[in-house]
Image (cartoon, rainbow over all chains, first blue to last red):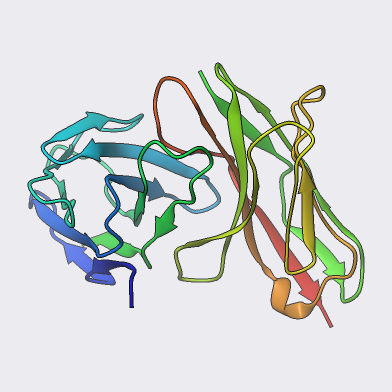
Length: 114
Length: 113
């Protein structure tokens, strides 16, 4: 089945550690996105990529890093510089350049700092 | 910049009641508008969308009309069910500038039997 897969579903990190969240899609979409969701809040854009080997900062990029070496993959690293990383992280993908094209979301990764 | 404002929740309704969730937006370009739904512990699913003024998106009994004059995209359903309990997000993407969805804060709907 075509879709977007995030792993792991739950992740625990000790303070001061970097951790990488995986996002893979087999929908042949050019564009991929990372959002952060906090309780009672909407989704805030961390990073996005419209094409392989290119990505842009979103609204809350500080303390995060990404890479886009393959079309199918867009991993997110939460670094020790991120002061409050406990949140629900959502990855999405969409076709590029199509008006009103739907974004497809993964099931999310819940990151907890212990 | 672009922004989306939704009514605060939670919205609590009895089964078969009428639902309205308000959504207004500001956008620098010409937006496409979306409603997404999130069930507990899951990602978001597209519920409906509209890409130009006066378009009506509809799906599973939900409807929303793109009103450019009032910059609104209110979600409605004539008769809600317990299974509709979820968080609903209004979102937009414009044809200029950043090509990424901008979301509202979400509205939690609780439907009681």
